[in-house]
Length: 189
Length: 189
DNA sequence: TAAGTTTGTAACCATGTGGTCACATATTTT
DNA sequence: AAAATATGTGACCACATGGTTACAAACTTA
Image (cartoon, rainbow over the protein chains, first blue to last red):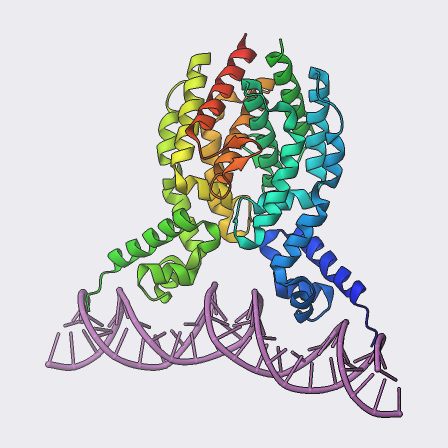
């Protein structure tokens, strides 16, 4: 039998990530990860220090926001830039399943194991939103709409509709984007 | 030993409700309910047909939106009425823990057992929002902000902050309310 | 080559889960 | 009073969970 610790660690981490991505936080457990990686669970404890260590590893690597953070570089100093930023952000959110599941996780629990992961995740979030830290009503309206976008994105995994809005149709999401744009415009008039 | 089926059924149902309210969907299980009710779990199967039956019972009774539905009666035909409606709705949402946990549940799963409960819950939601079924951008902006309100309400159970906003301070929620009001005004100008 | 160390596995443990069972004890019906 | 039925219990089942242990096989060092 071949032995390759680096490869084993990688298998474990990747199995953990894909499990989280595909089946959500509830499906993430020591047994499931070990089974998916095709490896003895003892190694998860030995190499990572259990699930808690795996979460910490993810927090440190910070994979989940990597594509979102690229948005952060642009300067948001005009109405148009804010609109672009919002549009890019919502699109990225809808495509990044891993980020979605971490956001979902934050709605379920916050214990010692998840604490660091969420802390890091929120820090990255804050960076992205550092632009609008003025205490204006646009700021709150904007946050509400971003929150709504997150909510509908998470909801769409299990529900096709919210009230009369079809969450499985691209048109609905375009309408949401348009509503955000228009709101930004109205507040800046 | 005394025997009183009606009282036992009530104990089971109430234990189920308070468990959901206090500890959320993950804590709702046959064993936990039976233990809390101080009764043999066999009776849950016999009287309700298991957890699935309990959910169905809740759906039929529809307790969770009862206080919200009282809002529904008012006619929403003016800007001011819509603002009142929004304000009352958000306040009610923040006070009604049971509704919160059902909304949280919808973000976690949607299987045969929960299907009817969610279906009913959404039907009630739709009734409340029947006012704004015109496909305007205000409608979408409004839905986004309601969704955001739901998101932040659920999030506040485990997280004190979203970005820079303190979710544990009443002031933040007042600001959210104001932002909604102002948005409604701007769209109606 | 021999000894020591790292990597890996499978069995095991205690605990918790949903679900069923046989049985005992009240309560009703005959 | 006797029989039938409704109500309730605790033990039991198979299975899954997180976590630990003892041991084997590979690789490294001496």
